[in-house]
Length: 277
Image 1 (cartoon, rainbow, N blue to C red):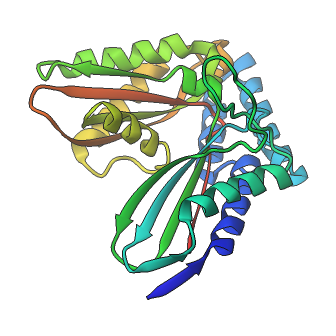
Image 2 (image 1 turned 135 degrees about the vertical axis):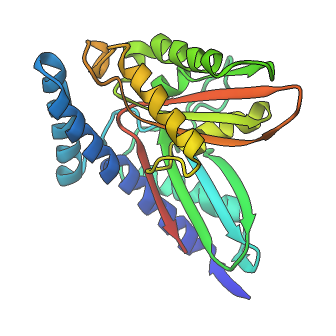
Image 3 (image 1 turned 90 degrees about the vertical axis):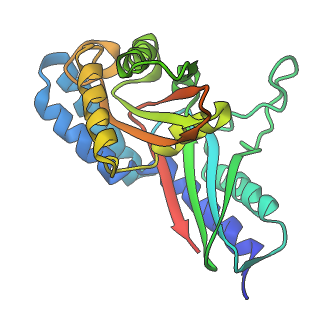
């Protein structure tokens, strides 16, 4: 049985923190450049500045955004793999190491209501585990800013809800986000599963860089994107043709009596990175 040491996991997670915080994924950079060509006036200037910000962050090693986010980890563990120690501890240590060594802002407080004391390590990270075949460890890190996360929503529809009703809920969520979540957005949509499952699907959707393989959902992604861009909220909410860069849908089976729909808003600084060990 293959064995991975805790120190290897910790060091790789720390590297992912730096990569995600400083380097915008290629697909997002391409989408911003394509959007810039479609815009005019102020919207075009904002997108030019957004791309310039990404260039400076990459070359001079500055965070893409001052809000370096909540660390969200998606872990796939091969069932034939052995971890030499506590996987949870190794992952959390990697976030602490990555945020400390790279001078990233620590944004996590220990208690949500009254104490709200900063943990000063940006831990604990939110971790989702999945056991798969093989002997590999796949780690995907997402740094999710608070402003966009605050504008995300979930609704439990009746199973009789129409496609139009669901699209209207998605559009109303985007409109409510407006300038407060730093558009142009990437929109993750989770359909099906249950209450917490739909929310997780919507966040996992943000890791994708291609349209849905299912022709129906691929068409729906395109339709929703077009309708979002017709809102003309535009870059930073100041008007324009491009309000969202991408729409990604993940779906799962659900109970006969429900139809969950979650919308996870992501700002233009879609920060994620991954590694397979």
